[in-house]
Image (cartoon, rainbow, N blue to C red; front, side, top):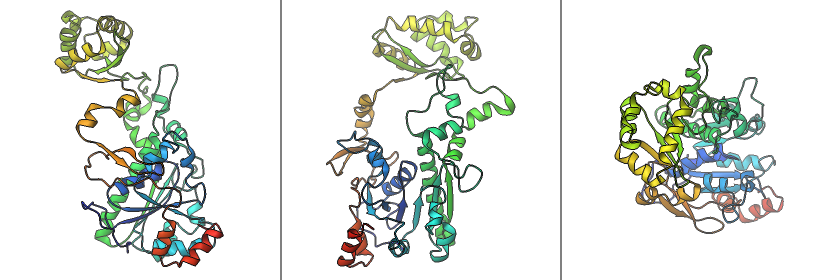
Length: 399
């Protein structure tokens, strides 16, 4: 059913699996990039000309979009106007050799194109179809526009994130990432299931449901009308001290205490004030959390006499959890990532670029970021289209 597998070493779990994706923005491309990481052949269908609109989000990577570089390496780009009459037989030929179809088009668009599971499963019973959308394939919100920030808000994430004065969104596209990862894991499960049943499956993954799953702690914390966890900036909402504290050299150290034993060690070995352990305002986590302002002032005053390096050294010696508040520049140079050899070099339309190995993997597929339509002619030839036919499709802007 799949295209002939292409030789590559070492062998990867999804080699021989072909994925076709009608994708744009972040959620679906992030999902399919994970599949490509594992060796699947991912054919990304893009509009002729501009391609995936995420290509134009910015130009921060030597002229390429930061979002696009992140989510689209190791894919083949097929430019195709899926609304053109000539596209239907091409898609039929392509899907006949495909294992997984992923799409995150506008609600109802795939059905209008005859690319919904109900239609396709009759012709391709082994095909797995994964639809990724903002709110799911049915229900009163089905047709509501859904962008990452909007779903962060709709899911309640913004209500518990930020400062006491103002809710804020996450700095990364967490709703897109959540949906992309649930789509990815569901596709892997569907491939295992197909190996047992011989049949494909329909997967309906929504950004809202993905984010609400991630919101389970604050939802249960606010169970049956209880107050939700308060917004606490970069600090923990219910545990204290747990968060960022400035040091005497103008830097910030993040630290976290989990229990009373650590609180006693912190007072003794880090602050040098063992009697603070039993202070009547700070002798339990609930009291420390309720009296954050005076305790914070006390810690800040103690840290003001130390550099960030000295604070971290004391915390490490006391075995108190801590972290640097790194900038993006710091993360690019992170010594732990370098020590574990997590960086690779990938190709792109603008030349070699660094890329991080996927978590847990050491031999992931790390191929190039494609240009729009870069693989169109090769894929059409593979499907049996003659050179003059391909040229004609180009001339009529079908591909």
